[in-house]
Picture (cartoon, rainbow, N blue to C red):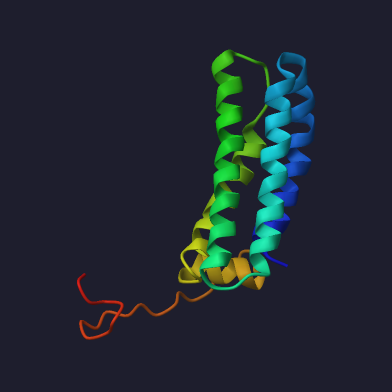
Amino acid sequence: MLVAYTNALQIIRTLRPIVEQLKSYDANAADQVVRAATSITHNVAEGSRRTGKDRKCFYRRAAGSASEVLAALDTADAWGWNVNTAEARVLLDRELALLWGLCRGGRGRGAIAARAGDRGRRVPSARRRSSPTHPRCRGR
């Protein structure tokens, strides 16, 4: 199981009391948070079963939904609503970092750790190609 998926589930668990608080201010805002957070888990799960660019598309959608939840929390703060969002923000930032690594196509420590389900263990970075004759490096 991807760390990004288990982290997304933890985000939902953390958002449950926040959604209840948001309902007292604006039911539509609470509903938007529920739909966006649910979309994170759905897109990560579906992306993990896809291949190639299709996979990255789902991870990008999940990142967009995570950003949407952050925007909803920012909006609640801007309205002055008394909602404790600190723990959710930390998890959302982690989710965005994990998804960024997955969208990069598995390069680097973050993506490898996200796929391996590794938590805290150092994983070596993938070797970067720097040859001017390599097709992916031309024009850099």
